[in-house]
Amino acid sequence: MILERAAGASSDTMHRLSLSRRTLLKAGAAAGGGLVLGLTLPSASADAEGFRPNAFVRIQGDGKVVLTMPYVEMGQGTYTSIPMLLAEELEVDLRQVRLEHAPPNPRLYGNPIFGGMQSTGGSTSIRAAWQPLREAGAIARTMLVAAAAQRWNVDPLSCRAQSDEVLHVPSGRKISYGAIAAAAARLPVPQSVPLKRPADFKLIGTPAKRLDTPEKVNGTAVFGIDVRVPGMKIATLRQSPVFGGRVKSIDDSTAKAVKGVRQIVRLDDAVAVVAEHFGAAKGIGRASHRMGPRFTRKTHHGRDRERARKGDTPIGGGCAEHGQYRRDHGSRRQKGRGNLSSAIPGARCIGADELHRACSQGWV
Image (cartoon, rainbow, N blue to C red; front, side):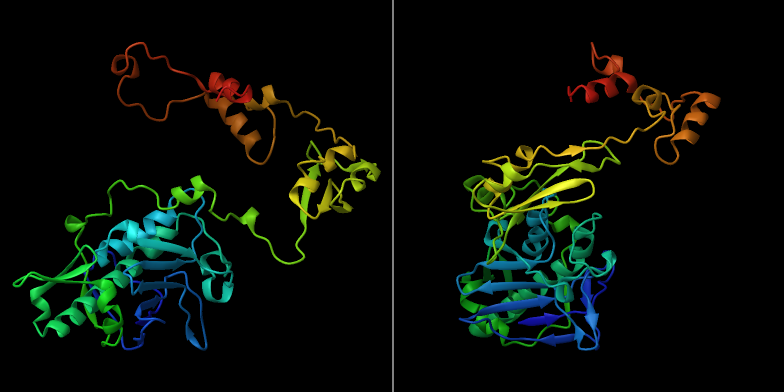
C-alpha cells in the first residue's frame, strides 16, 4: 500500500482520521510480497508534481516492520520514539520495528522549517511525526484486519489486531501480519480509521530500551564520520587559539613527509591537513602539530574574566546593559519554593560564583 498524504496533520485532539479528496491515495504490494505505506509528514516538501513522501513504512512478508525516516538520531532518542508512534497504532512490539535513515535528498526530505534543508533540530521531530505516524499505523492495522476477515469470510468487526497478528475473537483463529500483508495491499485504502485514545496507549509514555543501542555497542552503527565515497579525502584543522588570531607562519615540510598527507591548506585563521585517511590527517602523525603553525594574537583590551563575571565588562552584546542593571538593582531572587535545607539534611546551597569556579576548573 502506498499512501501519499498531504502535509499538515489534523489536531491531536481528534481521534479519527479524515482524508480529503485532494489527498492522493494508492495501494500496492511490496516486492516479494508485503505492505508498503508511504506518507508525507508535515516537514515534507511539495512541488508542481504533487506532494512528495518523506517517510516509508514497509511490512515485510516475515512480519518485520521497516520505517525509513528523515530525522537524524543525535542522542535525543528519535530512532526509538518515532517507531513507538507507529508500533502503538499498528499493534506490534517495538523490537519488530527496524528504522532506516532516509538517503540525502533535500527535494524529497527537506524540512521547510529550516529553509528546505534536510535537517533535524528545534525539537520538531516528535511534533511533526506524532499524528502522521500514528495514522499510518492505524491505516495499516485496519487494512490488515480487513484482509484477515476477507480470508476467513467473517465480519471485520469480529476481528482485532494484537501482537503482530489478527485474531478472530469468536473462533480464536489467528494469522500473522506477514501472512496477509500482500493481500492487505490490494484492498482499498480506508477513508476514516480510529486512532487510540491516550488511555489505551501501551507503548507511548512508557520506558523503552533504545533500538539503536545494540549497534552502537557492537560497532556496526554507521556514523557520519564512517561514511566513505570513492576518492574521498579527510581534512583536519588546527585553528588559532584565540578569537581574531591569524596564521603568521607555518613549516609544512614535516607534515608533508607523513605518509598519506596530500595537501596543506593555509586559511586566514587556521591550517588544514588533507590526507587519504584520518590517521594521517590527525591521528598517527599528528600532522597538524608537526607543522608548528604560529598565530598572531589579537589583544582584547578590557576583557577580563573576573570583571565579566561581575557584569562590568562588555563582552558581547547585552553584557554591558546587564552589568549596569546589576549595579543599579543588585541580584534578586526571581522565585523561591520549598526549603532545601529541611528537605535534604546536610544539603548546602552552591552560589553562582562557586559554580562558575567549579566549571572553569573542570570539576563539573
